[in-house]
Length: 130
Length: 203
Image (tube, rainbow over all chains, first blue to last red; front, side, top):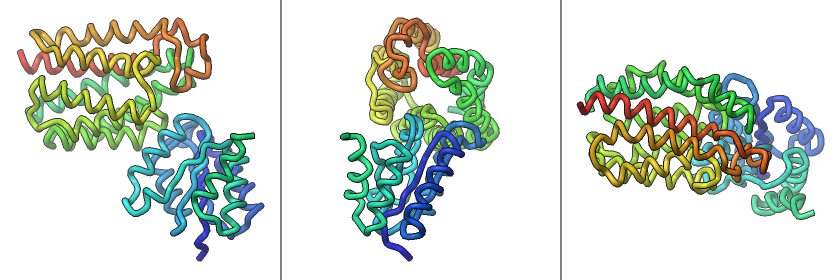
């Protein structure tokens, strides 16, 4: 069981979420736990707090989880999902301010080397500084 | 609050949102992503499905369940925003609130919505309706249940010339001017529905 930081991808589109996760999986293999949540509770365009919580649990690692989001609602719903997680998990879940696909790849690459959560977040967010 | 009043209150809020799905969606198509009506309807349909359970609980528990349902079912940013509003009201309200209690609780709930949405009044959001309604509630006086819907409606209309700073409408920048904010509109509908029931209950 890996102790590397897990990655969760949250998109309004189920296809974007799944596709981005596929890309990340191809680059880092099984060294990083990856999960995704896309679409509203009916499967349409939107995001689903319950699905985000399930994805966090699926990608859970003792090192924590970094979440990549696309638009506003994905961020707001991810923040809500974090608050609704177990107390011991909440402080080890971060949302990265980064483009979703590139950020996920950067974060996962950093995580695959065993970096801690702060470093993984910083790696994803470097993209915003360019 | 009697279970019957609570039932009527929840039903009125849910039914007004469901009845105005197309209006909210039309507003959101103009300056957002066109899903506000459908998202809110999905949330309040789930609330209606649970109404007998909600009506039977003490008011704070009912509001907490209602808020959690919106968080889980709406599927857009309005889910956590309205969810936070109702869940904070649940934390702050006693089972039998006075007008003073309601004003104080709404003040806290507005603060929570500001934090959740990283927003302030004047940015063309639901806060532009909730804040003036809270201020009128805090001032008190007679006929509150009749006056507040007018305050809310006027406040929603006042979002038309505003320039959106937060939410999807902010992507449009100056093009957001000239349309009512969908979240302000849904807030005004909820205030009107709640007051309509409370006016009858207090009379």
